[in-house]
Image: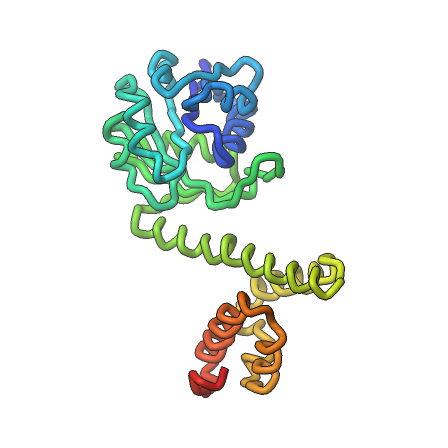
Length: 265
């Protein structure tokens, strides 16, 4: 049986991981990786994969084109790609954009959204990554889902409204958490401690939240309503971190129905 031909538009973090996965997926062939500058795409695919410009993608006549670029660049990229062959299914990896943004490229469009944070050079097991699929019709959705199942054991369907909520949840899960961990590392650095001392606490926090739920797992001065401790810690914090500490402490108290006055912190 002839392999299904796949191309990728984009050479960023998500594209890099998808290219690596698709290049070794049984029954699929990664035929091209495109970027404004082909040199940016050269190292993303297999050795036999062509690196090209966006405008060259149609000449490869892929069965599937995955568009993996920053949301703010999508209109420029679709204009550069231009219309694809009528049989090509074109999908966005975005968690926020509508599949209709691909209309200038193909009416056979959809969403191929991996719910994970990706960084070039940091290995990620795609088999554990949830993929969320949407298609212009059931046919496009199933074509994209079939590819996702070759990469992952967790494949789901989600419309635009649900995907928006999923993306918001992802921002809290990854981006905000990463920022808080950065604050932790700064505090430890300033106090002369190794950053490693926080790792067991972080792992235990995540494990408990996953097992018994975050609200049930909550501990600390805010959930106890210990205003004196929180005020003392606010005094000791660098000024730049005080608004975050104050806002999160107030949120915890609100979630657990702990009475407090706004001016107490």
